[in-house]
Image (spheres, rainbow, N blue to C red):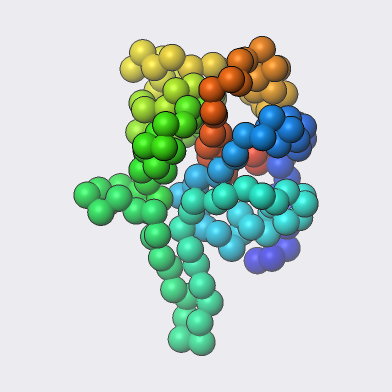
Length: 168
């Protein structure tokens, strides 16, 4: 399984995006309904650190796997990791949230985020529901848009884990 995990590639422009965000002293978090064991391995492979990761936990024990849904919304059983709950955590601290997503699972979070970058199913959802968003294909598109933004407000970036991945 480790080999399969380590074969995963990230968007080639993600590192430039990440460097830009760090130089602006802006926090970046990954929020995913996936599991920490493979997300952390992929980030480590690309030497990407200092990213808070909100995701499901999987631990190996002698008696089997233990799965924890640490960020699950107790009032909802749709997702293991409630992305809107994570967004609300930052909003409650008077932070502006930029959400980057690509799937229907991000639909609750984009309804409350300040700035939304969307592609694929999420972009279709945003159009259908009149949610203001910026369409993107890759992190070069996002970075190009960010370079035009005013960062005088305190922004926090929340990124769906799948968005940094690329398909081959």
